[in-house]
Each structure stands twice: as C-alpha cells, then as structure tokens.
Amino acid sequence: MIKPMWMAALALGSMPALAAGALDPYPVSVWTRVLFGVDGKPVEYTVVDEPKYPAKFVENVKVRVAQATIQPPLVDGKPVTLRSGVEMRFTVTPNADGGGSVRVDGLSVGPIPIQRSLASYPADIAANGGWEGQVLGVCTVGVLGRCKTVDVVAQPGMPESVRRYAKASLDGWVFEPQQVDGKAVESEYRLLMYLNTMDTTPEDFRQDKFERLLKKK
View 1 (cartoon, rainbow, N blue to C red):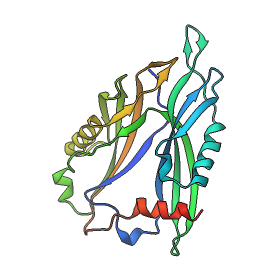
View 2: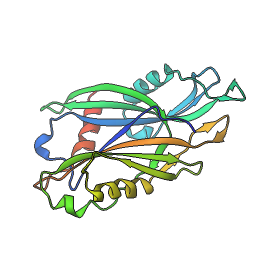
View 3: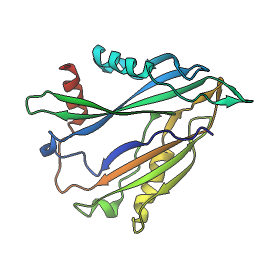
C-alpha cells in the first residue's frame, strides 16, 4: 500500500459559508495527474479540469509540479514509475475591490478524487445552531477506485451521527487509483472534515469568488 503523504481538508455545514465572511481567507486545491519516472521526477503531467482555470494560473501550477521530486517506489529492490495525483493547496484572501492574494500552502501526492459526495447532514447537529467540530476520515482506496474501508477518527464525545456522516460520505467517493510500475495499487486518502451549523441562510459565493480573483492575475 502507498502510504499517505497528504491530508485534504473539506469545510462542511448544513449550509454554505455566510456572505458576511466574504473577505475571510479560504482554501482551494488543484489536482494534477503526474507520471513520476524511476528517478522520482515528473515525466508528464496535466492539470485536472484545466480549462476552468486562467492560463497563467495553470502555468504556475505546472511549473511548481515540474519541480517536485518523490522517493520512487521499489519493486524487487529497484525503483519504478509512479502514476499519481498531485494536489496543490492554496489559501485565497479576497479584497473588498474584488482582487486579493493567493498563497501556496503545500503540495502532496495521492489518489485523485474524481467523484465526491456528502451524506445527509446529521439531523441532531443541524438542529443545534452554532455547533462546530471536525472529524478525520481515513479511506483505503482499492485498485478499482472505491473505499475498501473507512476509519473515522474523532475526539472523545463526538456525536455518533457525525462519525456515521463521515463514513457514509467517503463511502460514496470515487478515486483515480495510483499506479506503481503501470499497475493499480491500494493507497490511503485522509480527509479532515470541518462541520458547522449556521444560524441563518447564507449565500454560496466562494468558488465564483475564487474564479473571479484568478482572472485578475
């Protein structure tokens, strides 16, 4: 099994974030499909959903990915290729005038999520305005791209409904599995899920805000 080298983070709630927080920093991630050679350096790479991003932003991502180096996996004691996803994580800080800044937070390697889903938000949590917490879901991604097992790690006292929610959500995800020497292998995907229950109905603005910000670069 390929051991995890990353942790994805997903903010979740019974409703999207409040419009009042439109200027708050927020995370964005971009995935790239990469073939690493036997020397651990990228041989070929393509940005997932490339057309949705501005050309200059895509080029910046590719430059950073091209500089990445991994410890190549070994088969019979010899280094071999690894085909994998590479996630780049950013923090976007908007400005009141529509501009802002994009900070690179990290780069990591793992199976690419190609289909995400969320289970029904826990009813007991949804009824408790102002509730917030987090839980870690650990998915063993099989060679067919589905979670073979999902382990949930949470602080003592976390409602059981939240644990079930995290497991049911990841059970519905589909991944592009990693390949070692051309063969699909099991790997691990770790998802840190932040949950919160707002008191009022907000506006869902963040993705559009990020795309508008990128177009200004």
